[in-house]
Amino acid sequence: MERQFKKQLMIEHGTHAKDTGSPEVQVAIITQRIEDLKQHLNIHKKDNHSRRWIMLLVAKRRKLLNYLKRKYPERYTALVAKLWLRA
Image (cartoon, rainbow, N blue to C red; front, side, top):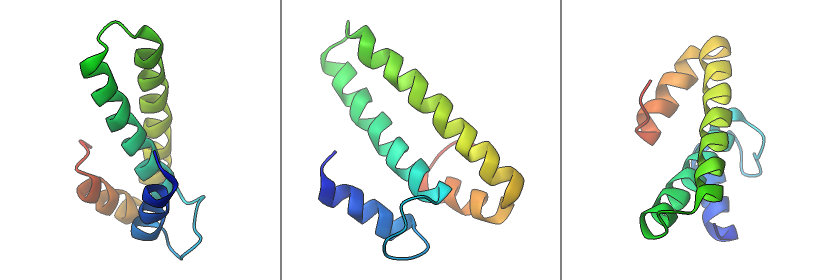
C-alpha cells in the first residue's frame, strides 16, 4: 500500500489530520491490507504465507472492532457502515 493512499485513509477515518492511532484508522488500514492480499491470492492461489497473513490481519481487525463496539458503540456502527463490513 502506498504512502499517499494510507494518508488518505487517515484523513477519511481519523479524528484529526495526523490521527494514526485511533481504532477507526487502524481498522481502515487493516481492511485495505486484507483487500490487497485477497487480490494477490486470486493470482497466486498456492501462496500459503499470504493466506496466513490474511488470517492474522482478520483476527487483529476483529479485536479492534470488538474494542470499538464495547467502548464506543456509535463509532463502531458508523465505521462498519462506512467500510461495508459485516457486524
